[in-house]
Image 1: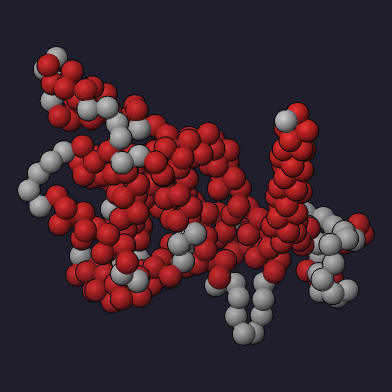
Image 2: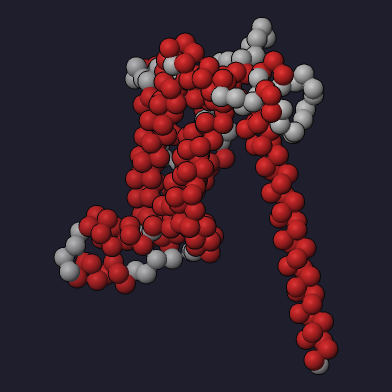
Length: 286
């Protein structure tokens, strides 16, 4: 019996070591492109591809000249793109969190006529490819005079179906006794949500903040369609505009791409605990 226990513990230890090595290998593979991007952003663009793809830094060609070029070119247009992306991402994330959390909460805790039908419609909308919706959405933004505006980029996707589904799953497992206690104390339904239930949904808010913000920050096709003037471009559209059949402006593109990663990393570091606990809770609720 003791030999079996020792053998079992040895197998468990070996499996843990193998899993650790596997995850380390995956991490290294994932980090190689990021490392090359960071290294190339400090390298003279005339020498980036001269010696082929290499991960060994060429010390004599390293410097901050690419960043100086990116931040000062065309009267600092890069900072306009950066600012537009931050504003649009903030507008979208805050608005989407507010609306989708309330809708998901209603689906999760209330019973009302047509509830199942409406939720099925939400699921159906999640399955429709964006390419099918592009033309109707563009026509709608044109009719509302929202082309080339930040609101035109944000408004069509403010109520995200995946976020509604996530908040519905999370709120479905929340204790209903707290709602009853709030009603006994004279709280309104909105008061119960904002004062009692919303604080309990903090892990869900943390997880969806990262997912919604990343979706908005990386959005490319819709801003490309809606935004007309160069000064109103988001960071993704602006950086893509640097590539053309005639020239590839890597002196701006590479440091610009490095800087574009920083807000996402900061956002994840701030919300990583809520992100993990929110995804874990949302996957088993309901």
